[in-house]
Image 1 (tube, rainbow, N blue to C red):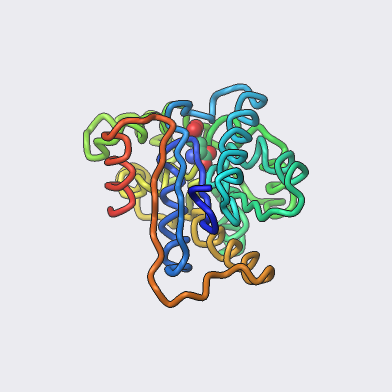
Image 2 (image 1 turned 90 degrees about the vertical axis):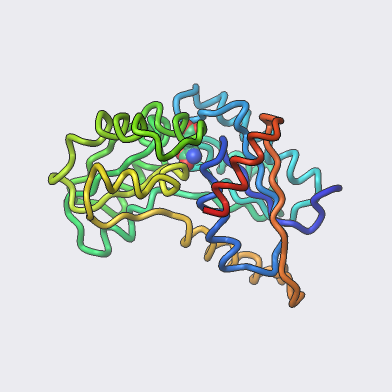
Amino acid sequence: MKYKGMIGLMDSGVGGISVLKECVKLLPQENFIFYGDSANAPYGEKPVETVQALTERVVDYLFKEGVKAVVIACNTATSAAVKYLRDKYPEKIIVGVEPALKPAVKANHHDILVMATANTLKLEKFKQLESTYAEGINVIPCACNGLAMRVEQGRLDDPDLIELLESLVGQYKGKADCCVLGCTHYPLIEKQIKEVLGDIDYYDSGLGTAKELKRQLKARGLLNTDSTEGSVTFESSHKTDEELKLYEMLFQS
Ligand code: DGL
């Protein structure tokens, strides 16, 4: 059990690193293993059954290696698989993520652009979120096909990323008073999204997810009480040194 007592985070690829950063800030004494399924990215445009099976494979692996909790740091994987996995592992802590629509509505925004994958926007979880929190609000869903995959490639300062963002969300500039980054890859390119959409408010689910993880660990007496600083380990299904370097670089940036 190589990850015994650690906290496992998973994503289809590098995106979950945006959630990992918040978890490490809030729980600096914990040991984290981040698993990116980059060999199978993107999840956002695959059949839902495939996403569920891919997510299950990673979560099974992390539990088999001894983690004390799993964070599904991917909106798409959460929507497709969290319910199924909580049924499969009723005794385990499994924290999911969801687009931060609730805080955006609470802050009195009325024209809310939600950038997410096609799967996240079409699945039940998002529909429920919308009907629970956003009645009477102009929610503008935007399926950002190809964007997570472009983030997977790195080179985030290259101009083609801005061109892609222009084609995906440029039309909403001036029409949305805030933007929900509903895919964990997108906080990694918030600076570039701002270049296109301007200086509106942006919401993501990183901090909320970290707080929920802490709450659940505390409730079960599973918080690490050592005073020494914890560690972060990276693993990827795309088993190359370059991939792990990209993970490290995005984590440090
Ligand atoms: N990072 C994932 C999410 O939060 C999905 C990206 C993808 O694989 O399409 O939805």
